Image 1: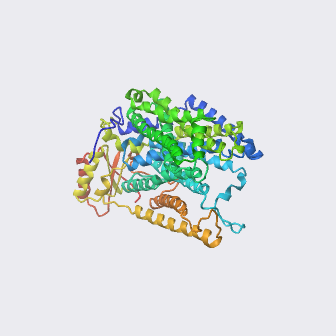
Image 2: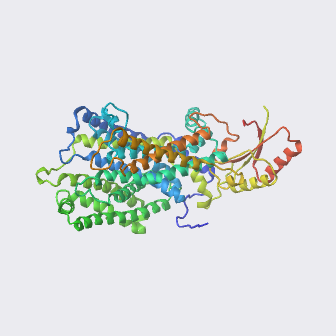
Image 3: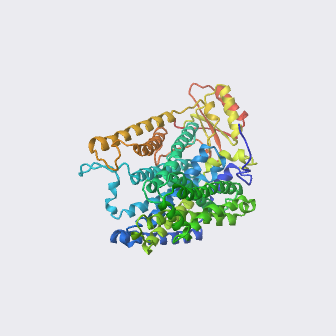
Length: 458
Length: 174
């Protein structure tokens, strides 16, 4: 069998099987640390501010946002695409690497998938609120009605979005949950606390860990993963069609689906990197999330960053080559130069130029620098969506209707609220769920470390 | 309490896999094995197979067909409404069919998984050895009434010989 040691040792510190269980479950067994309460407090505050924003929007109307006739999609859609993009990493990470049988996925997939769940939750809120009349939200489903019955427009990318995102959420959640069952059983059989035994016993669904159970478990994981892999590609392609199916200059391009999918994976990996660095620092998981893991992620980011750069240049080239003056105006006069220069160049610098620093081993090995660059990627990808949504809408075919857009405090509050929701979700995940897939780590322990895992003293 | 089974407990996966080979070579019927993580060699040894991929394929096929039927019925038969100059039965149905095929496939695959494994929230189980979800591997052999002393001794002897760190007899629900 093909065997190479390109990734180095993936689990350090000569762990035994019981060490792995103990180490990973330590955050769940320990007393709740102060920083956790502080973060939860702040995140809840942010979430409540967002709830206020949503309430105010629904009670008053979409007019409380900074939108106008031209720029009818503002922060809500920017943030929706941004969150969905981040949500892509979890599934991309765990599923593509599962199918490619990459062993280094094992310590990262659980956290990446958790991130997906919370990011998709945050994303899904925006289109829902953007409807304005949220009480009519059920109109998006094709149901037997008294208006004809008049069905949904099945040619509309907005309807495709509804199906894609709900499917994506369901598939990611199921994949995540099924993967956690053996670990919940581990907690159930190990804990001495009665409450924990009850609660984790409830969620472990009566897991046995017998041969047939593992066979079906592995098969199910592979099947769910195999189905979710094309879904990852299709979800963001469909999100991009919300734009590219229109005739708005700067949106109406065929590069959009691959460009969005790659962008999503890029921002998602950026967020995974940010979270993994925080997680391994606070929980001292350096033995599990090793420098080799971070190195692997940064290498992927370097490559994706090159694709991003190519996509940006392709867009400019196509605008020029199309000979359409509207296309050319949007790209050259309203993005590269013009009112939105800052956003455009921030996007380009953060996504295509700064990650190129990862070519240097010195940068890749410096975790602080890696962390800072990962934040730059998150910011850069937000600006990419800002550039796409706002510039194209602000100045279209008719100069008489040109308008500028800036968000109001309500829109900002909703965005901050979703950040709060995401962080709160991640904190609950850190506290109550094994953040690393215990069973999977044990499965690769013998092959990818120097240890003899069964050599424990007990 | 009636002790109806023999359990051999191991702590190393390689020793454990060899032990299974040894037991099978001596024609001893292994009722089940328990491990903290999936051991890929075991399924061939115990001749375990699963037909789940076929089930998933069928769910997917049903999903594609029924979604198309629904789209066709709503857009062409029930309320034919032209817009955008597109034909009533349009190519863009493919997108919805693609996504909802995955939806149906995923949903029913995991429901099937829980059904055939008889798993549900709050199910109570008693493992022969609780540490098998952490750091132990266990072989469970059914102690049948027709087995005589000699045969039982042979099983225990084999378990011991193959490196079991503990051998116990206890009641297990089959």
